[in-house]
Image (cartoon, rainbow, N blue to C red; front, side, top):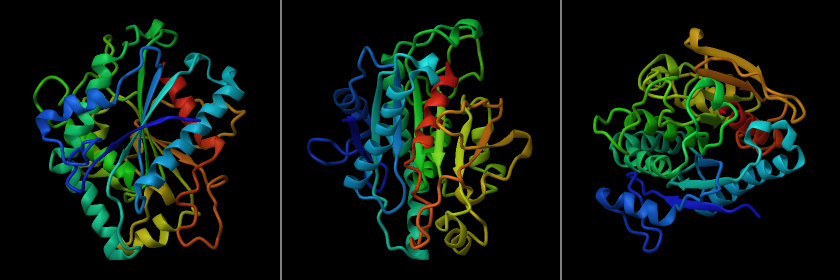
Length: 329
């Protein structure tokens, strides 16, 4: 059974003490993170998952475990498909946040604004930076240099979001990159430098709940800055996602969401490719934004009001995450 470590935030982005459920003062966040997220020496990959809208704590934990179990199953079934990550000894973390609201336009806007506020206040970005800073400080960095990096041993960092969870992650990364101090409160690093940077090795969002043109404007455009994020932003989309089609158009001034249409720009940073069968390999481009057309797989039941919005629990989704981890080497 897949084990998932849990971190909880309140609606202002403060970390909640796992033992007492009370907000943790900013200066105590590193100590709490170190106590509850012990990085295992034999871990090869760390995955940080953030859930989406209208997801209870219990459902969030189950969703993370379900997705990561698909990854564990697939690596057991076809380890030859991911030779650079063999052996695969992952450590999984789920960040839970208060995403509940009414299934209405007002409820949608409430959560949309909350994800931005949690990051922009500095609390959520501080927590995320501290978590990744802890892992970075304690992990074994991959060897440097382009020739050895692809086959060297090291511990890699991956972030995964669903829906508003992707919005939360990108807000937090963008805000954390604004910090000017050295150490675990900054996301600034060189892009493709000879020394291995402190960064995410992949950032994947299933059915991202932002307008399709979001990366052409602030704040999302900052993620295209090579000094902010040293990884492509990989995003799935499906025309069967009614939550990010009809619902999104009604709440975001007529704009479709990325999870319905894919990102539409900037074109010079964009590449679109299909979600692959688990038996087919990926040839990832050197692009900052990668659209993954998942319409063949993410379909759900036509009776579900949100359509395919949460229909990403497929082996093909796990194959995408594992292929990105393999590609990061």
